[in-house]
Image 1 (tube, rainbow, N blue to C red):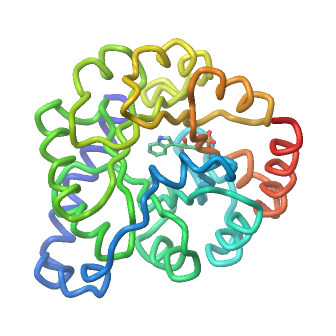
Image 2: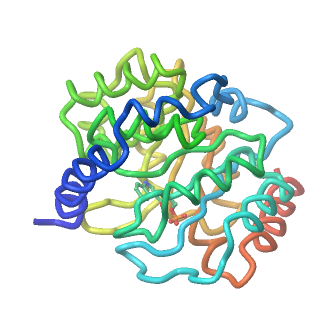
Amino acid sequence: MDILDKIIAHKIKEVEDRKSLFPEKLLEQSLYFDGQSVSLKKYLLREDMSGIIAEFKRKSPSKGMINSHAKVEKTTIGYMQAGASALSVLTDSEFFGGSSEDLSTARKFNFCPVLRKDFIVDEYQIVEAKSIGADAILLIAAALEPQKLKSLAAFAKRLGLEVLMEVHNKEELDNNLNEHLDVVGVNNRNLKTFEVSTDISKALASHIPDEFVRISESGISNPETIIDLKTYGYKGFLVGETFMKTARPEVTAREFIKELMVKS
Ligand SMILES: O=P(O)(O)OC[C@@H](O)[C@@H](O)c1c[nH]c2ccccc12
């Protein structure tokens, strides 16, 4: 059993527990159900923005503890002031040390699109995403059957959420493209082996149809990589560790984005 299998097995149990604790009917009373989502796709296509999706991630199975003291409010406001286009917030607690409250906090203090970063296996988690103020959800091709991925994507769209589908190889891409997706992300990290290489984004770029906004995820540690990836049509760049592993992630993000803007 690899780490992804382990996470998914745990997630299925967790979702069952949450369903009985917070029934869907209760979640649907959230004020966010009356509001429109902010479009991640639109923010990524804005020429005046950096394209950086800055992530709040305390720990990960591949790196262990990354940052135990950073506060969501200060970090996410700082990310936006630094010029990030959007935020990604890990809500998985067991493996990534996040929570729904982290996302709600990020939502409360920022106007930008907020991506719920979690392992979605059930429609319930999409209702939950909407109820805590997320604008977009992640669906991981390596963790879902194509039919399931498609039906979850359609469900998210009905709730007004945008969908980022994440792939790591051509097979996942070819098997899962469908009309409900807004953004296609190439994860440079193999979730089963933790190997990371931005060459994966380069190799898959030409296979992603133009109607989907392309983003490159993970292992991005310098602005030069982004400038290079832009030539392959990537509009968004998901960066976590490079910011979070420093004492003040928002300051690191500011310097990084400043350098990116000067060089591009
Ligand atoms: O910290 P990095 O290497 O910059 O990566 C960020 C993000 O891409 C990564 O956290 C991620 C990509 N896909 C995921 C799926 C689940 C959890 C986490 C992820």
